[in-house]
Length: 302
Image (tube, rainbow, N blue to C red; front, side, top):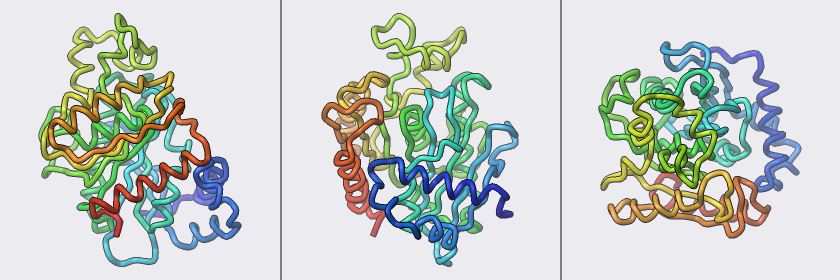
């Protein structure tokens, strides 16, 4: 893989994300951080991870230079209601993983304007397959893959990590079974049908993603994380504000209750008064600590 031309701009974007994201205010005070990242990481952008779509199916890869041993991996999925934003809207939430020396894989997927559900799920599963297929090359420890994202990205992280092997959603990425070590879900949708027309929780972004498919209710069920709750899932941490106007807070509550009933190790971190991804500096610090503790508890972070 060749180091791509826009790397300096990408590193600058990450640094600015660090500076603007309140949880990482201390990092932004370190003027050496950007240079440290460029020195410690090889960054390759816009890698094609599936030939099914050669425009959207791209990922950015951050590989630490200082280790020869396989290291944990963060698979990061952006939000935007399945219909906007991209991997280039770099999130400060990947910064702690870079600081820990992880491989970071930041993916794009087909948006609702390109293709309706369930294609975004299929793309994210293909990105996970790409990590497995290139594990040795990118120094990835496939036993310690964490998948995470915000909003629609949180939903896609749940779907990517919760799907059982061999479903139709893996048609574009055949191969041995894939498993992630943990899912960190930032205010992701868990019941897509609950957001469609006729529901008091109707959301336009969900209606657009499902579209006018004749079997809309069936498709919505297939792409809902609650459909896949069962024993044996990896540990799941959900984080959401209880005043979220974009994704109903009850989606996280229902997932937490269902996972607990199935015996799946999981936690729900409720942000009192928190809206959609807009938390205070103190709340963001608490989130960062909670994530680190959660990953440590399950042996992903030493």
